Length: 216
Image (cartoon, rainbow, N blue to C red):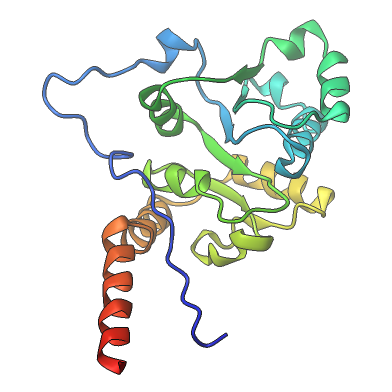
């Protein structure tokens, strides 16, 4: 076990950086007609836990506060309970809940940058990169703290156990009322850019290769 070294995955270096002169900037209000929204990015399957977020959104009646909920991702494994809940939505609720798939990387970055809050309620991950992408886009993140996400301590105290539905509802309500400070968001961004970059990963790997060669 002492010989195992984890090489971190990395976020897209493009995300969160200013556009160059002449670059096309997507207007979220124009392309998607939404603002002030909660965002979740992940393919749809049971462990990804879109069900928890949608149930809590409805429980807190956030659509009545004009806070849309946006899911980005394709369905890879059916979630019957989620589909039943979607089918039970009222016409008014449906106006504020959006599902998108197969959008461009540029559009996804704009969704990250313009969301009011990024929420990641996944129950299990091998890594979990979307909350890191949101962090470098300088937006508040509320993240699950189970499995691989337990490493994301720089999001604390804005983390939660997805098995605790009441606790998650309380934290979601609290962060919407009092979001993290600009200093906190900048600190999380700095940690992610330093630790989860291909340059950092390459340097770790190169050091390992040199140490292995020197020991032979």
